[in-house]
Image (cartoon, rainbow, N blue to C red; front, side, top):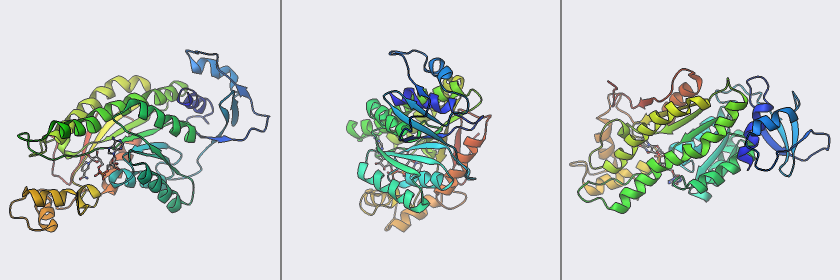
Amino acid sequence: MLTKILPALRGLMADQQNLPRLRRVDPTGREPVVSLTPGCADVLAELRPQVPAGARRVTFVAQGTYEAEFSAGQGRAAGKIAVVTGAAQGFGFEIAAALANQGAWVALADINVDGVNAAAAKINAACGREAAVGVAVNVADIDSLKAALEQVVAAFGGVDLFVANAGVLRAGSVKDLSVKDLDFVTNVNYKGYFLSVQAVAPIMALQHQALPDVWFDIVQINSKSGLVGSNKNGAYAGSKFGGIGLTQSFAMELVEDGIKVNSICPGNFYDGPLWSDPQRGLFRQYLDSGKVPGAKSFEDVKRFYESKVPMRRGCTTPDVMKAIYYLMEQSYETGQAIPVTGGQVMLS
Ligand SMILES: NC(=O)c1ccc[n+]([C@@H]2O[C@H](COP(=O)([O-])OP(=O)(O)OC[C@H]3O[C@@H](n4cnc5c(N)ncnc54)[C@H](O)[C@@H]3O)[C@@H](O)[C@H]2O)c1
């Protein structure tokens, strides 16, 4: 319900092109009171005449009182409301932390509920403000996504940036990868991205309808394996190639709703748990499976992969953040897949 109301209210309470965060507060009794008729088909048309110009607090019948809070910060993401999926650890956590550090309100969404709550608390402690909330989500389930976004909107009022980062990997040859593993990878990486966009796009569209000059961003964290094949890793590479097809298609379709849709394709992120977890990480898996000929240690596996990169190192979150800020700040680009690979993948 809130996802159908607060994004519109947020647009109507904007200060010119500057969208506020909405915070639930106790009513004073002096706020304008607004309501919608049951089954209302055009929320904005009904709300517009009820919200006085310059209103900073509004009571919505049966939903509570909301106050507009504008950011006074100077960061590159100041005042933006961001959702990052798969944010309990790895790239997702570091992206969420970087956005909060640059002034954003951030919802960290993950299937690992304890992990994501701890991650949000860590960000709040580091920022010294309540910048982050943790939200449970399974991106492969549309009902779970809708419930998570309802929580995000209740906390912040809308969504400006959605980072579709949740992703999983099961390496293995086409000759013997199980159907179970194929489904697992496809459900999270491909279907999960599709459903994430299906769930968040209406929120952004409502904001754009209220403020037609303001645009919003969906950024998928793809992979270099979405641009070139990956040996004995076809399920993952296929799901990521498919993600770029979705990005291009969504970009065409959602342009009318003021939504830019782009992918970022990072190279290997060796510092994250996906690679470096001592028991289950890729260094361990590749060492044990003999995927790297002659490798006797994690260092040998790392050197083998680094040698494929002209810049001779792995990708880091600061490298990825530069691409995210480029996409947010660039008003004339959509449907792209941007490599951040140290030259390992070059576009033709
Ligand atoms: N690590 C790399 O080398 C690398 C390189 C390029 C791209 N990527 C991509 O970056 C993204 C993040 O990778 P990472 O290395 O940080 O991974 P990670 O395994 O460290 O973290 C992934 C997070 O996603 C969460 N998650 C898994 N399934 C989920 C689901 N169904 N719903 C919600 N959350 C779910 C996990 O709980 C975890 O917190 C992925 O899309 C990955 O494909 C990673």
